[in-house]
Amino acid sequence: MNDRQETVVVIGGGVIGTMCAWYLHRAGQTVTLVDREAFGAACSHGNCGYVSPSHILPLPQPGAISTTLKAMLGRNSPLSIKPRFSPSLWSWLWNFSRRCNREDMLEAATGRHCLLQSSKQLYQQLISEQKIDCEWQERGILFVFNSTSEFEEYTHTNEMLSDRFGVTATPYDGQKLVDLEPALKPGLGGAWHYEGDCHLRPDKFLSQMRKQLESRGVEIVEHFSVNNFYSEQGRARAVSDGQRVLEADRFVVATGALTPFLNTHLGCQIPIQPGKGYSLTMPQPKRGPTYPMIFEEHRVAITPMQSKYRIGSTMEFAGYDTKINRKRLQLLRTSAAHYLHEPECEPIEEEWYGWRPMTWDGKPFIDRSPAMKNVWVAAGHNMLGLSMATGTGKLIQELMLEEPPHLDPAHYSISRIKKK
Ligand SMILES: Cc1cc2nc3c(=O)[nH]c(=O)nc-3n(C[C@H](O)[C@H](O)[C@H](O)COP(=O)(O)OP(=O)(O)OC[C@H]3O[C@@H](n4cnc5c(N)ncnc54)[C@H](O)[C@@H]3O)c2cc1C
Image 1: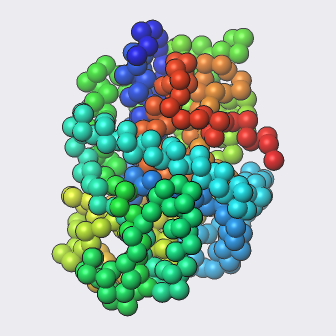
Image 2: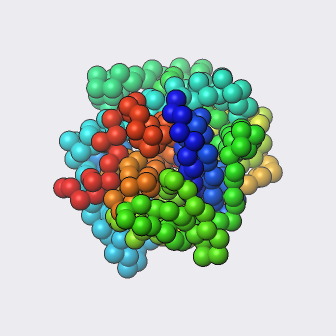
Image 3: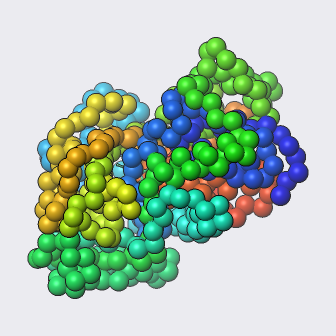
C-alpha cells in the first residue's frame, strides 16, 4: 500500500480503465475516470463475457496470412477486410504478417499467458471479496469443432499449450460431446473443454464496478472527450475536452480502439486497428446450452449467462465504421444454427457491435508514454480485454506507484513498436 494521496485521471471508462481506476484507488490515489460517451458503453458492453486463460495464442500464427487472404476474398468469412486506401491499416497488416511465424507467436503467447493467468486469479479475488454480482460462472469453455479432422488436429495445439504453458483441455469426441452438452446437434467432430475458463455478464460487471468505485469516492465524468494534454517539461499537467480542463498528478490512457487519435500527444504511434465484432443478446432458449462455446471453424461464440444468452463474434477491419452490417448478424445466426438444436430465442433484446482494439502482435500496450513521464497507456487488448482487465489494472497501479510489478512489464512495452 502506497500512502501518497495523489490525483489520477483515467481516460476511458471501458473495462480496462475501470480496473485501472479500481487498483489505483485501492492503492490510495484520488481517482477521476472520464469517458467521451457513457461509462461502459463501448467495446466492453456487449462482448461475449469470457474470462479465458485458454486464449494464449495470438492471431498472428504460421498460416494466418493465407487465412487472411482467403478471408479478403470470401463473402461469408468470419474475418473480413474492407478494401480501402488506409496507410495505417496496410502498415498494420504488414506488421501482422511479419509476426506470422512460430517464434513471434510463442513470444506473444508468453506475454498473453501471464497476464491472463494473473487476471483470472484477480477476478476470483475481487468477485468473492467485494461480492460482485455479475453472473460469474466457472464452467470452462468448449472449443467445438465441426469436422473430426480439425478436432483431431487440435491435439497438437493442446499438447503444445500443455507442455509450454501448463494449460490443458479435455477432449470429447462424437457421442461424448452430446452427452456433455445435449444442446449441440449430433454428428459434430468433437470439442476440447478448457475447464479453467470462466464467464460473466460484462454489462453487469461494469455497472457493479461503477457502484463500487462511486461508493468509495471515485468520480466518473461522462461525455468528456479528451482531445488535448497540457504538458510542461515532459510531464502532463491537465487534459481538456476543448472546454473543460481536468488537472491531475498522473494520467492513464485506456481508450481502447480509439487510442491512435491521441498518438500525437503520447509521442508514439500506438498501432491499433478497430476490429469490429457483433453480438446478439436474447433470453436463453429452452433447449439452450449450459456451457459457453466457440464454434472453431465458424469463429462464433455462444454465452449462456444466468439472465441472458448471447451469440457473438466475427471480425471486420472496416475502420471506425458505426453501421450495423446485417449480413454479419445473419452470419452469427446461421453459424449457431449449424451446431445447436435451438440456436436462438425471441425477442432479440440487443443487436450490438464493438471495436476491438487490435494490435499486430496480439499483446496490449501497458507502458509509460514516451512523451510524458506521468502518463501511462493501457490499451490494445485485442479480443481479450475482459480477460486481461484485472491484471492490467494491477500492473498499471504497480508501475505508476513504482512498486515491484507482479508481471514482467517488458512484454507490453511501447518500445516494441520500433523493433523488428
Ligand atoms: C463481439 C465481441 C466479443 C468479445 N468477447 C470477448 C470475451 O468474451 N472476452 C474478452 O476478454 N474480450 C472480448 N472481447 C474484446 C473486449 O470486448 C475488448 O478487448 C475490451 O472491451 C477492450 O476494453 P477497453 O476498455 O480497452 O476498450 P473500450 O471498452 O472500448 O473502452 C474504451 C473507452 O474509452 C473511451 N474513450 C475513447 N477515446 C476517448 C477520449 N479521447 N476521451 C475520453 N474517453 C475516450 C470510449 O468511449 C470507451 O468507453 C470481445 C469483443 C467483441 C467485439
